[in-house]
Length: 224
Image 1: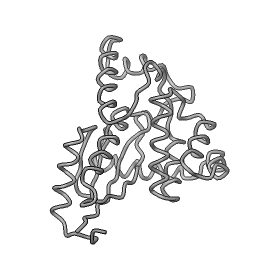
Image 2: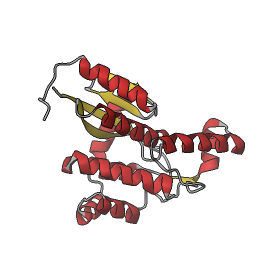
Image 3: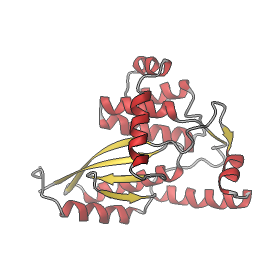
């Protein structure tokens, strides 16, 4: 018998630990298949909701936020690079130079979910790659249109959404839902609306949690 789970992955496209966490979660899901299946939904969270359109230099931003020196930031980047490499995600060396506003990216992700969870996941991963691997600006509409097309979404419809404020209220409502629930750092992985896993955990942590949660519920679908 196969157990089915719903997973809400609360994250921001400018969060490196979210990219790591997604890679680890996907690896864990591959390990538990076909005994456990999951429908993965990406929920919005903005690390910097007040970020100006021009963005901010990343050293300046992290120094102001955490008081970290250039040496400390370099050490953190190397640790993140290694953790990413372990789950098959490439952090481009020296590519990420600025922090940007991500609200429009979340609006597109909200729309993508309405199209299909598979296309939403494809868009999320394309946004992670654009920012962390290639050093591109996730607030730039040309970039957003390009990655929407790469994810199999209708580019004309994406352009229409970006030209106005469609889904803005829906995204803000979801953000409020999760912050009101006590989520103030990401990634936050919520399984079946009951179980919370915080942070970019290793693959084995996700795998153990998935097996435990699936084993504690009635089997939902017969295995093919």
